[in-house]
Length: 474
Image 1 (cartoon, helix red, strand yellow):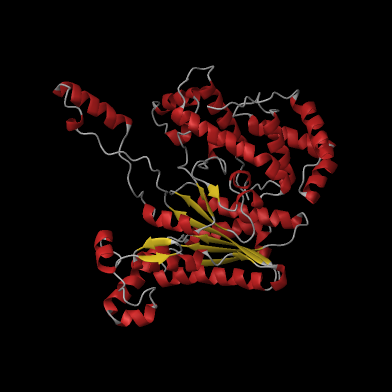
Image 2 (spheres, rainbow, N blue to C red):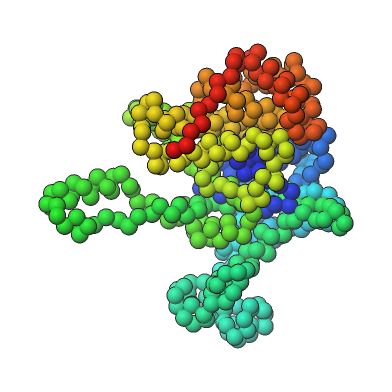
């Protein structure tokens, strides 16, 4: 997997993880990088993992390009691609998803390990609407076909108002929740896809099927505020109220519930509650976690004729993994999915990024020397360090070396624009002079005292003396 995924939301064997993001946020590219990472691990002597990629709703040109990239890297020898191209019917798309899962389950049941990518699963929502409408149109006959949770409660059409549904059918208990019978039916249908991933006990063969399901959309932010009205400010004059309302409207523009090409937020939240975790990607050039200097540079560049925010963004923001939403991404497997070496280093990196998010939202000292400014600068540096060029997977031992250098402050003198060059220089030196230490980390997946001492000495040779990062609470 890319560095940002392995560090922030590790994907363990048998886990079902959701990859959520709007259009053009790099979801499919990240999934292809994940397959290339599995191929690289196999070349380094790790246990082989059979990859299955289900491309649903993409153009044939995109599918051919993806297959060409995998073939060029040699990954197609261990990868199966199932395609339901753009223009295929809903049934064909659903069949492609089920076929990919069946292939992964066959490998798992035979004692092997499979990694299944479903790109994308938005057709599941439309499929459920079609099924529920058809069953509702059958009337009482639908009870025998659908085997509902409560035979006394009918299946309502999906466009039935929620409060109206509750009055007609009441609530049922499903997985510890009180929901309407129609909502429980829909959740069970979605679960039949997501919850097919599993890690089998060694008595039954010890196989596993890991699932990465891609869903175009955005989770609920929980920050929507009701629009201000003139009645909220009765003590102001009309001119003052008009001026204040105009300023508030400019500061907080309305946000669309559903972006073009994305599924409804309710469906995204439903899938997120079923999966074992989610990785949320922001739009291509997010404004979050920008230092005051970079924000002013971007605004100045936008004022130039013919220059967009995408063109003005730093180069590192266009790399894989640079747009992960730290606050919304989570793995419910927790630290158990980390290799031992990553478990020692990754949580502190995630904590620093989360601390920067809190500093941006709640910090009060916004001076150039204050803690708020330091947290934003540190977060920008970490995000740039976790990004990586597309189609260039990074092995575990190099990730450990990079995280160790970041944690100990060896790259603190670099800037977000130059840290990729500094990382490449340090890794090249370690590979040339201390390859035995990297080999020990790869073989044991642990950062022992001897390997740590070698890494520290090598980083001092390349980067100079370390500078301990400032760690302080808000």
